[in-house]
Image (cartoon, rainbow, N blue to C red; front, side, top):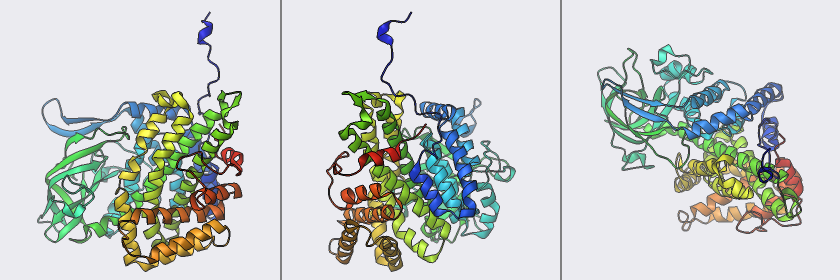
Length: 544
């Protein structure tokens, strides 16, 4: 008979065996809002199937195992031959294979593809964020390759396939492929124009030999990579296949894998090129312009990834507080804890609503929507990714000491939380990109103002925030030094306008009162007590 001191009481059950998509009301409503009605039934079935898989005990175990067993580099085989291979735990391959088969690399050629993929990405990466990196880059490579119709015709069907093939062999022999990317170098970082990797033209038109070192090359197990190098005509984009057409390995020397804070299931590497065969993508000297479509798409995935992480963190916090009792009642019913949970839920819903609006703009594809994305993507990338870490910290604290131990899964979320703010350009890079859009592309600001103007008159705090933003935009004095403040306001006003139009009144009221009206402290849990906080928390509660 077990000792009575070992009886377990007052512990929340695991959040498992539920539909991650159906339990996320904000995400589900965004899908309904942005998809054509004739696509809705099929999309819901597809996303709910993925949601049930994500919430299953098996997939949650895969995520934990992939995180606990990071990839391992093998530079040579037993005979001393250079092979430069990365070994992954079987759970990693299962996760990545499921992500590919769920269509998370195939948005560009199907109706409503970006909205459907974005919702799936938010759902699936809650299981384990690490596999989101190769899924994202494979998806994002398409617009860059489309600058060369011949390359696009050859590679796009493989990139957008729903078949995962982990073997290293010529791409022509594979039904589906993955892509990585290598832009940054030691001496430049985000300043890619400082790259020194050299591209020497070969006899065959459009082919080059690359020599140089990449400080960050993501997903080195991929079948192909888009990289930047200095050709005779200037910085140029290239496609580097991992395996050549004759079956020999391209020169792709993996020097080491990065030992990262989080995102540990995913391999990030340093690689060397030494006469590495490459194919030019786009014109010489236009490498940044060629690859910018890939960068914009991966920046949107940073927003989606942060929205995903925030949603999982908030879901875990509310689930725990729904079952945990303290001081004579359930934590979720305590006024102060309810304030914290509602505040976190607001941040999560605002992030999801904005991310899905950006995905819908990709599906629309009109000139106005493209102009809107030019400003909205870097602003959203700046703000949403920066909100991710404080949300993860506060959500972890809601679980108390239980949240501080690895078994809860919350430390994994916390370690992951800064990544999307750094990847594809950290905060200053995004803020400066917004300034460039404002200064060089007036259509971008016009499109943004038309978007937020659709909510004008619905909330006096939003109206005042729009007016104040216009005043800030009219003052160019010291604009670079105050760029972060300006971009923050751009993102908050956009989030507020979307919530006023689409969210329940309780959510929109609380967001406008706190984020736009100034009735808010410096930490979570400082919402005005007069708001309907219980309704906000209940809306965000995951129903297992």
